[in-house]
Every structure is written in structure tokens, then in C-alpha cells.
Length: 417
Image 1 (spheres, rainbow, N blue to C red):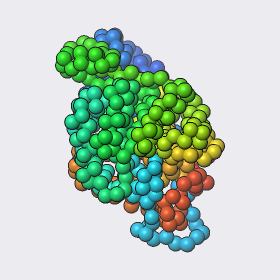
Image 2 (image 1 turned 90 degrees about the vertical axis):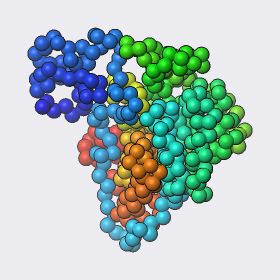
Image 3 (image 1 turned 120 degrees about the horizontal axis):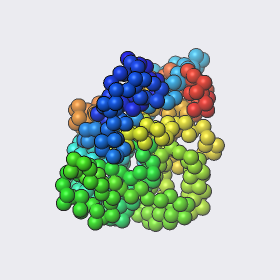
Image 4 (image 1 turned 180 degrees about the vertical axis):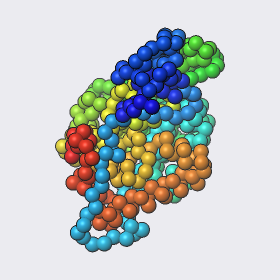
């Protein structure tokens, strides 16, 4: 089979396409000798007239395209220093305004059935493990007060004093007063969604079978597109980002007197955004406590396949561009799934790491207990890396960039090493 070091161009199993002569594909992704039958992505677009989404809907997806990432960084052990027994390493810290057992949080996942069906188990497991859990967008408009309460209650009933339940809001959620509802129901904090790594500039997307449901969301301001198979696409309004609107929102929601988080994608202007938010916190004393930067490789329940693959960069690649210490925590997300990933993100300068799809996998395997066991394994891996670096506290690992060795010049440039 023809090797493609980036991704399968013009064919992919998740788009339901293939090449007739896969061993003889040109650089363009088109067969060198085309027999014109069109089982490829070009042919599917010609038949359907729309961009392609990964399928079947109801699963979680992530970009396939290979770009320099954390796998291209090797951790260099520290030779000199006092020996550290890994089981004694302290992983606790403060993250986003909350005491946590480990600087890992559950990335916001929203109203897609594949996420919502196990989110209560994820919430219970996260609470028992003492980490922050974010409930994602469109929960309130889709499932109402009862659906939002269910997720918050699942966390709070397992809460042991560390971690927090925060609720995310997009354009539509904010119009529905999701933050006010969340705080009333007991949420510890809120998260303003400005974007996500898999589709910055595009709103949350799902497939709806019922015309009645589609009409309901159309009335709420969502964009509804009828598909050839009779189902409907629901697209959220992506919202606008201006400095003045950010200022107004942060001042307004600081009145709720809970920590505020922001989620945004890694893109051009990210450093300017962070610097503005830092200035705003210092001048206006807003309750902003964390900004999550979501990057290439971030999961989603539904996103155009080409947008997911061909936009964005790894979130940790932004960290070396931040010259000053931010007055809030910077959390990275997008493709992290083990303790080594978390270690590298923190060594590059992040305060914490958010994970989404891996938490769903853990919940599907073992429900709430699966989530706590998975997090226990990650904590063990983090402790081992700390021992390798001769650090007794995980927080001492932050910024140890000199102990990361790039395996390629491209990775060195990507991560500023």
C-alpha cells in the first residue's frame, strides 16, 4: 500500500471512500490511472454536493493528519540530584481556581448522543478522582433543565472536596442563560466557549433525525441543513470575538462570583488574545481563572473532515510564544491521552491538560470506575516522569523545556526547542 506520511488524501474509511488503485495514487490523491468510477472523495462529493463528514454519526472523531506533535519530543532524564520514589510524588495543585488531585481536567463535551449518554458516568468518575469536569455546549437547549441538572448532580453527589464542576456556554447557551442556571444548580464555575481545535470558526454540529426537532432548533436560531438521506444537520452560531465583547462578558459573569474559564482554538492571534485577557484581569479584576487552548488533534462528535485535518496546530506549540507569566492558568487540549503527554505539555509550560475522547472511552469500558482507574493510571505515569526528572512535586516539572529533545528539526521549530 502506498505510504502517506500525512493522511489519506481523497480517501478515508471514516468518509466511506476508497481508491480503485491504492498502490498507484498520485501526490494529489487521485489514482495515477483513473477508471472514472469515483469511489473516492471526489466522486462522493460529485454525488452528494456537500463537504464530507466522518461517519457514522454517533462516534467521536479526531484528525488523522500527521503533523509534528508531542510524540516527536523525547524526555531527557535528570542525572544528578536526590533520588525520588515515584509513589511519593505529590501531584496535587491548584488549577483554574480549584484545588485538584492532579492537573488534568475533563474537556467540555456537549449534546451529541455519544457524549451525553455517558457524561454522567464521566462526571461521577472525575469527581471521585478530584479533577475538574466541564459540561459542554448545547446541553440546556437540547435536554433542558433536567438534562443539565442530571450532569451537575452526578458530579456533586460524588464530590470529595477537590476538583470542580464547570458548565460551558456557547452563543445559544448564553442566550438561554445557561450560566445563571448552572450556578443555581450548584456548578462551581463556568466556561465561555470561543471555539475548539477541531473546527474553530464553525459552531457545534450534530445530525437530527426528526423534522420536529430540527424546527425546534431553527426557532432557537440554529442553522438547519437538510441532508440527502432526509436527516438534518444542526449548526450552532459560532459567535464573534472582539475585545469589547470579551470585556463586557467577563465583567458581567464575574458578578456570578464563581471562577470563569475560556476555551479557544490555537490559531493566529492567540498570543494577542491571552495578553489582552491578562490585561483585562489586572485592570478590571474579573474572575477569569483559566484559558483552555484546544489544538489540532482535538476530538469532536461532528466536524467536516477536511477542516478537522487541515486547520490548526498542536496546542502546546503556542506555549513558547507566551513571554510573560499569565495571571490565569493556561490549559492545553487536543490529542492528549496518557501521563507522558501530560508531562510534556507541563514541561513545555502549561499549567494543566484537558482530555475528552479518552474519558469517554474509559467510561464506556468501565463506567465511573473506569474513569477513576484511568486517571489513577495517568497519575502513576506522571509520578514516574517526576522521578525521572528528580522532582518531588509535579508542579516543579513546569517549564522544564531543556529536558525535552526534539526528534526532528520540524518538531524543534513547532515547539520552540
